[in-house]
Length: 374
Image (cartoon, rainbow, N blue to C red; front, side, top):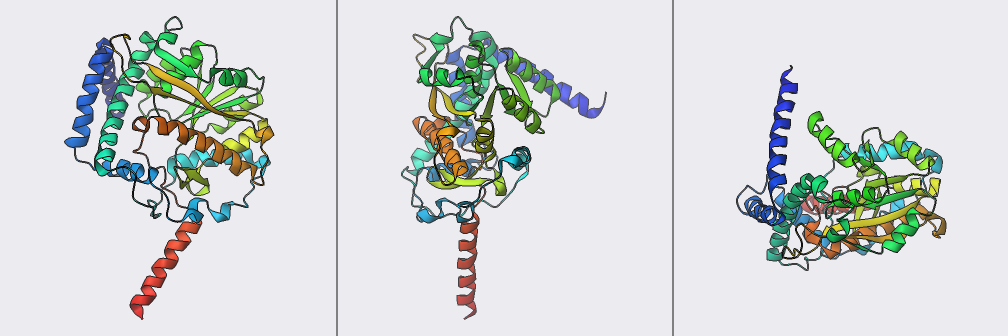
């Protein structure tokens, strides 16, 4: 056995041991442990290791207003109209950008946040508590939620709108973000026979990855590795199937800049292209944890919901791709605002900058250099 294989096997043994411990805990015990770990991550562990400053900057940006609204969209993109015939290359490009593009953090000016530093600090701590609870819930989910008791654990908002979209006979793209507990939503849909192709990144350890694959596919879903996912995604759309995606990661330099919390964010335009090509409905959904009520519920409770259904056949705009992209991004923002402490603020959503912002900053820097030289 190679050293790499031995290390992966030892990691898997440690992982299964942790799974056994987590499955023995009650929801109340899990919540208490998560509170302790959240305090540890924010108050004790060096902030550089926990990406505290990234989360702080993102929250501060999200709950502020841009100084210059003209920079909320990249003017170079306003007349951009990608050809539908380039759909497959665009999907591959977008997926590659999500994992390999690196740029400098955005320096877009914005007014002070509407939240105080103490409020931001508390939100970061709550975010970590949520993430630790979510990890435990993912492990406990297979034995806790069944078709018989799922209605006791979840409340579904706008379910009629969701059901109509899924039963329309047309392919559908279900979008969400790194918000709440998306594993609960996926489990719920599978229990009710709404099986999807779920696009995501495979875990590096093949043994641990196989465990999660088995757990997620137990309700009939099909996992699609983000690396090389384009052919399978297109195949699923052509067959009139359902596709599940998380749409809130930075799309890199080739993404389309639309407003997200009032600031330009590089977003995947291949979603809009795919919806237009296959006449697929876009369903923006969410699933976040409701306030605990351990006196009346033996586990965590969740609110699932359909925030918006976007039909590309009804879009009337000069730039249909931009309109669709902005609408699903705005729908996700509305959902996140309901429980912002359950959003994954530690990824750099505003990592990429519109070219207009970069040009403006370069001109300002050049002017300052000229003033110094003069």
